[in-house]
Image (tube, rainbow, N blue to C red; front, side):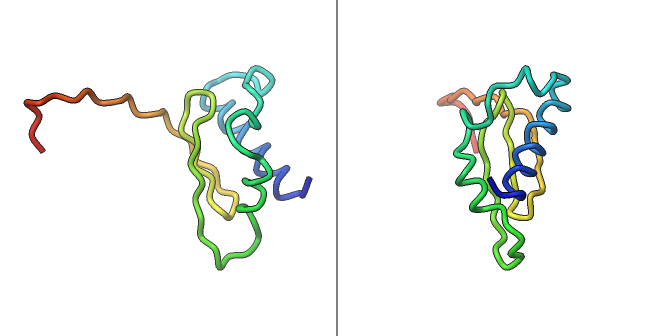
Amino acid sequence: MGSVHKDVCVTVSETVSNVLDEPVDALPPLSDAIDTDGLDAVVTDDRSHDVTITFSYAGLSVFVRSDATVYVRPKRAPTEYSPDARV
């Protein structure tokens, strides 16, 4: 496991843990939510690739940029379709 991969996985777990106010050990395995090897392939020191990976983890939307920046936010509730709704 590369150091960038280990760091980004730890960062994701710790960030989600902080947001949910839950210990990291109480979270499901990160590998259940995303292919951690694939995440490792995207998160690199190569600044010429600006990529953001989005996935769901522990009830949150997680965004990981290729520079290993991690953002989390609550998942949006699905909106109900209404034939009377206007756009």
